[in-house]
Image (cartoon, rainbow, N blue to C red; front, side):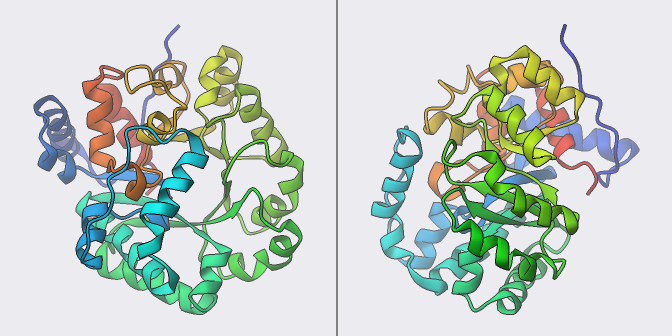
Amino acid sequence: MIKCHVVAGNIGFVGRSMEKTDNIFYEGLTEGNTEKLLSVPKSDLHNHSSKGCRRVWLEEKLGRKLEAPPERFGGLDGMHEWFTENIKPYCRGSEALILRWEGSFIEAKRNNIKRLSMNFGAADIELVGGMDVFTKLIEGFHKKHCPDTFFEPEITYPSLCDLELEVGRIEKYISTGFFKTIDVCGGEDIRPFEDFKPLYRKAEEYHLIKRMHVGESGSAEDVRKAVEVLGLDEVHHGIGAATSAEIMNFLADNDIQLNVCPSSNVMLGYAPSYKEHPIKALYENGVKVTINTDDLLLFDSSIENEYLLLYRAGVLSAEQLNDIRKLGLANC
């Protein structure tokens, strides 16, 4: 039985205004009109900050052409290898990192992103001079480029991080109140979920939204176990859950949201194509899903294009995609 989402919540539009916005979104999809899609409020809740800018924008700032990404990367290792060979040589050091951070906020303005969750690593915070310097930089970019955007900074940890070190210093980052969410990324099946409990318990003390990269390459059972062991509120990716009706029901019943990145999944080989993307099964089984960019610089597909790609592939209807769009804006 297909379950449907009903999105009720204040996203800044009422009455005719909301209806007009919906119609512009529908027209953007059916006409393939990028300008209309850009004009409609959207969210991006799975955004790696240092790779959240557009390649064409970065080329202009660097004064040089950059290699376009391939159609397929061949998994995370292939993606990291491509980035190391084709982007990183021209983006080393703190100045280049800061430039790409600013580019991510510029893209949020261009794409009318009204709810933005962007992740930052502890190593990057230290690279630019520590928490005080970092906070002033990021708050400055937010205020300059998209002050009306509801911004949820996310502190993120690689799966292979030095856990003893990070548990010892996480409080100095999250006690400031700047971060709103926590994430672990960088590959699955590297450590047992239990190993990350100390980080997530600290996050709970400061009322952070608890997220984790899981179910991208991993199984449906991995998704459930991560939610249960770490008390996750949301899952980044989570598409592996679509292979199990039982676990989709578990996610729906427990109100666990999946922040899905279609182009990332297809280009990394975790979804066979846009047409066969698991987001359809997830949505139709009542799982809350949002549509996001992941790494815009690498996957070369901004938010409005993600919606258009799914629509053109016939994965979801314009009405279903609009439902997802509004879900991403809930509570902002």
